[in-house]
Length: 357
Image (tube, rainbow, N blue to C red; front, top):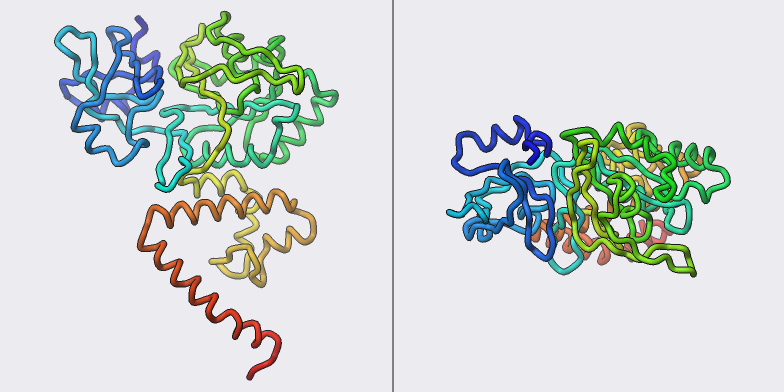
């Protein structure tokens, strides 16, 4: 059995546990609400205590893969009762669709988040912006992996264009199938460090994991002849210890990526717009229709692309909507404000046309 330090245990978590009688454990797999965790004595299944289950304000406060737990062992040592989820250093979480606002934690306490895409039909800059906003907001380091690089005739040009579009984010091209470029991940997969793979179904996450592990730990689906995409095979989130000692969390493909609270992440994902915003005439500029808006000026003269700007506005609107859902009072205020605006709109339009006054 590896020591807990090999699984990322350090003073940040040890100080939270203190002199407690509970033992530390890290969640290494999660499926259908059941968790398997690792302790100094080995792996064991864990269950939530009644108190923790009752006090949790939502799914985001319950254990997820990568979480460190304070666990009380059963008399025979074969089961752990989760007393507390220790405070996370980072979290990768997406919003849940539905009437109530909540978040789904995809991975916790990760150092690096690999966003895996391909050179074919999966490549989508707007979706990459969404991934980066989620990762930055959660406190992890994003790295874009472009798989199936052998299918691109201009690999150097593609990588250069992606690096230019996402400043401050490392972009790596590789082939999980042949192994080309996979060695470049070694600097992120070091002992005691945790990485997670995110991306759509069929982009090669399972193939890449098998390549890094040196064996077929994840089953691979057949490739569809129509679009050469692999069928989704990973059905649960699971942490693997790589031969070199690094930790890698594999996740199922994401069909939808709804952002949770990602305000700070949006600023970093759209650093060019955030920089321009500092030059706006008004500090509270929304970059929609205000006079003296530096962002709109850059959009007009071609320094900003329209799709890039449109996605920025879309994500901000999602965040505003999310905040209103979480704050019923603020939601009611916004409804009253818009009702007043719509009531006065005919008068405002007439004034603009010079029909009154």
